[in-house]
Image 1 (cartoon, helix red, strand yellow):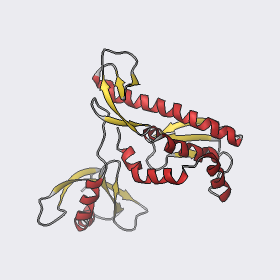
Image 2 (image 1 turned 30 degrees about the horizontal axis):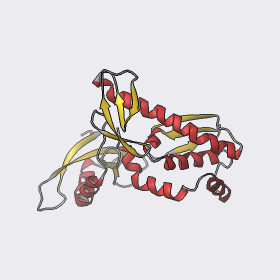
Image 3 (image 1 turned 90 degrees about the horizontal axis):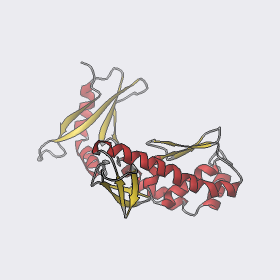
Image 4 (image 1 turned 45 degrees about the vertical axis):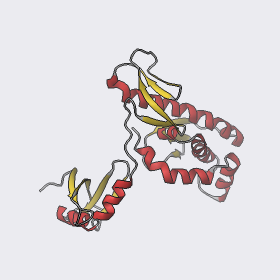
Length: 239
């Protein structure tokens, strides 16, 4: 029987409680030596990885064995925050209500603590994301400029991505890439990530010299990394 890509399975976190729906994503791996599971905080699902010859029932047994832990972890995930009228989206760490106003012009813009989106309601989600990406690029560019000048370096280009595990990167050709979701975080968190990647233009490593450069650019290193550790997964659930 072919392995489904995903499905919903009923699990009991406690024998005395009724079963609860659990979204499951199935994966096969030629490198896997045993059945394993992990929680995907972005998809809000359990990912079961099976070796090539392992049967689906082995994954089901692992799900049943860890049902209590799985349901507790899924229940503790940040809620999804879709881009729709009335929803709240953080920008620079401050919550903004998405307000749909089809009578206005300008696609999307900030006004009085709200993100106003114009046009047909069917395009609200796309226009919100387009606005956030443009705003992310603008804010990252502003943050990068003084850090680059302080170190006497210049990025070849600044690009945006939607990565799940990396907030920023510096390529060998001196191109800096950042997750557009940084625009959702407080400005001092965005500033630290930008300073970190700009410092890589001088030191393409994580040596003591590199961290010394970072310390000259920002005082938020430890606070920002802790903030991302605590809240980064929630940012991935926005939109």
